[in-house]
Amino acid sequence: MNYYLAILPVTLLVSYSQLIVKWRTQAGAGESADSLLGRLLAFLKDPILMSAYAAALLASFVWLFVVARLPLAVAFPIYIGSTFLLVLLGSFLILGETVSLIKIIAALLILAGILLGVSADA
Image 1 (cartoon, rainbow, N blue to C red):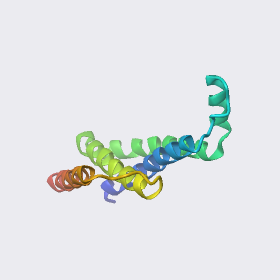
Image 2: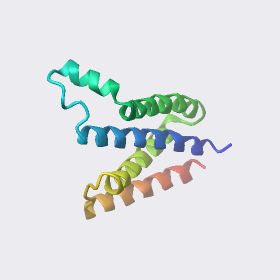
Image 3: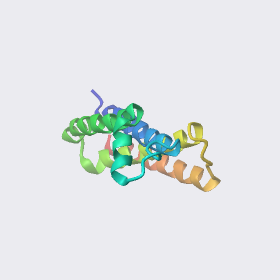
Image 4: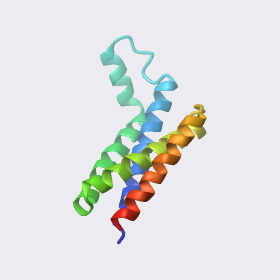
């Protein structure tokens, strides 16, 4: 099995989690509560927001599998870089956030770094 592919579920789950948390808080989840505790309880009652936290928890378990089989100095940059790329794309497509030319250039540089990192380790 190619252990690099095992990074993909971690990236997808963490990206999902980040996008959902932003979407739900942007939509006003928990804002009707008066206190910090009330907001936290409102967040806990939001099933969509809880799915984001469940995805992050599942990602951490999959990550244990990944780091047991790949050098951390290889796996972590691939995970972080690919997560950044997915969140950037998702924030544009799902949340309607703007993507500037600088962000596109940065994303291309990150992608180039990921490809170089994987090919150097192969």
